[in-house]
Image (cartoon, rainbow, N blue to C red):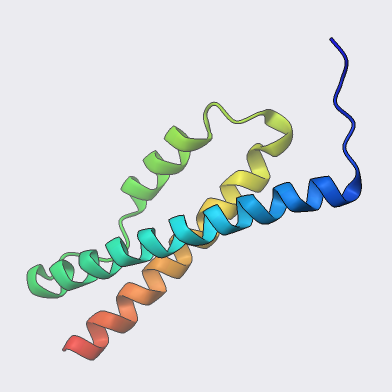
Length: 95
């Protein structure tokens, strides 16, 4: 089987499609994060749960190619950090 060779322009077009998908998924995730913050504001549950975060990172990274695994974990940690900061700010405003 022959390896597909793409031009830089073709690669960038594919990246643009993925970036658009990631934007949609990120915004959906943040909507859910907003709902979590509302619930946690009512229940007083902690925003940061290190055990849950560790388990999530392990579960999601287990099948990632070793050459990408560290970068993927960093990516996930960034999203989690954004989500936690958002939740903290929302709860602060609600109280």
